[in-house]
Length: 301
Image: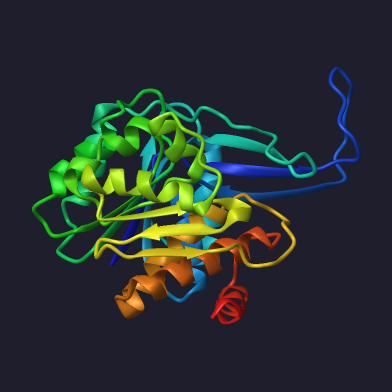
C-alpha cells in the first residue's frame, strides 16, 4: 500500500480576475475550489493512474471537514486526524498572476496529535511506500520528517520525501528511496545557481553521498534530471505544451515516478512516467488524468 502524509492540507481557492489593483475592490471573473496539499495532490494523481493510496494528515474546523468531503468525493481512501482547535488553511491563488498566492498557516499540531499519526504509521509493513510531501506547521520541529523515518527505518518501508531545506536534509541519513527537490531548492542547499540539467548532476550526487538513494530534480521548462542509485543519470527536456497551471506539477511528477516504479521497477520508465505526469498537470486546468499522462508518455518515447 502507498501512504501519503500531508501535515498542512488546504482548501485551494483559485480565482481569475481582469486586472488586480492594491487598495481597490477587485472582483473575480472565475472561481474554483479544490482540496490541496502536496500529499493529497500525489494521492489524487496516483488515483487517476489507477493506483490506490491512503491519504493521511491533519484536519481542523469547517475547512477541514470540507477538505475531507472533497477528497472522499474524488474517491480517495483517507485516514485523517482531527484537531479540535483552529481550522485547516485556505490558500488563495491568483490564476492570472503566475506564482502569486496567499497561503494560510493551518492549525497548531500538538504532540498528542503527532502521537496519533505515529500509531497509524506503525502499522506500515515491509515494501509499503510512505510519501512525505510539503511543508509543516510552525508548531512542529524541522526534525518531524526525520523522526518518522527513524521510527520506521527497520520496517522495510520505502520512503519518498518531497520537502525543502532542513526537512529534506534531516532525512538523508535514513537513506530515503527518493527525494525530489527542484533545481532552485537544490541550489539553495549548496549556495549555487543551477540553470541547466547538466548543472544539477554533481549536486544531486552530493545528496546521494549524504544518503539519498535516488534524486529526482524537477526544472520546470528545463525538464528534469534523475540520478539513480545504480549510478545512471537520466535527463529529459520538458515536453512541448502550453503552461496552464503549474500548481501540483511537482507533486504529479512524484506520483508518476512512484506509479512507474511500482509497475516496472525500472528507473528509466519511472523517470519518464514522472516527467509525463508533471508536464500533463502543468498543461491542464486540473491535476493530470491518466489519458493526459499516457499521451505525453507516448510522445517522449
